[in-house]
Length: 301
Image 1 (cartoon, rainbow, N blue to C red):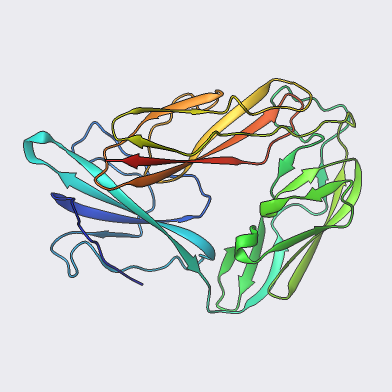
Image 2 (image 1 turned 135 degrees about the horizontal axis):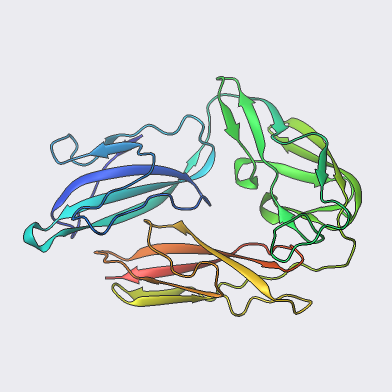
C-alpha cells in the first residue's frame, strides 16, 4: 500500500516512522524524552524523510503474517531548533485479508490441555481457578506457506465448547473456567476445524468473575494531568482486586501506578485531536479474571 502524509499544522517534521500492530496489541513504541527528537524502540515498518518522493510517505509493505484488523501507527519526529523537539502521531485501522487460501488450523498449546490442580491457591498468583478467563492461541497455515495467528473473532475464528459447565465461551474469543471435568474446545475458520481436549481440576469453591470498569470516555487538554479510575470495578463476593492497566491505542505514553485502582499520565502535546485507548483487567484473590474494560481519552490541542 502507498502512504501519504498531510502535514497540516505540523511544521518542522524531519522524519516519519511507521509501525504495524494488532488491533488490541499493547503499544510497544517507547520514546525517550531526554533527547530532542526521541529514541524509539520497536519494529519499524518504514522510515521516511522530506527528501523522498512522496515526502514522508511511499510504498509500505503490509506484514506478511498480518490478518484481520490491524493498527497502522505513524510517529513523526519534530525539530524546533533551540526550542528542542517532540513528536506527533496519527493512527488508522486497516483490515488485512490474505490473498492465499487457508489450509489448516490448530491450537498452539499442549494436547490434551490440563488446567489447574487440586488444592491450588492464588492470592493474586494468577493460577488456574474457578472463574479464570484466558485465551487459547490458534494458528493457521495458508497456501502461501505463511503461518498466521487467528485467535480472535475479528480474524473470522469461532469457538465452541462441548461442555459449558467446564469451559464457557465468552465474547472476543475468550474462554472461562466454570467447573471441573472434561470438555472439548472446537475452533473453526474458513471451513477448517480443530479440536482440543481439556481437563479441568481446580478448587471447586464457587467463584464469580470480577467486573472491570475503566470509567467514562473523556476529552482533555494537552499538557493536563489525566487520571483514569477503576474504582467502580467490583467483585461479586466483595473480595479485594488486583488491577492491571495498559495502553492499546496511540503513541506510547508513560502510565503511572499501572497496578493500582487509579492510574494517571500527562497528556502529550498534539496539533490535532488524537485518541488514546487504555485497557483495564482486574483479578480477585482466588485468581478469577474480568473481561477487559476499555476507556478512550481524546487529547485536544
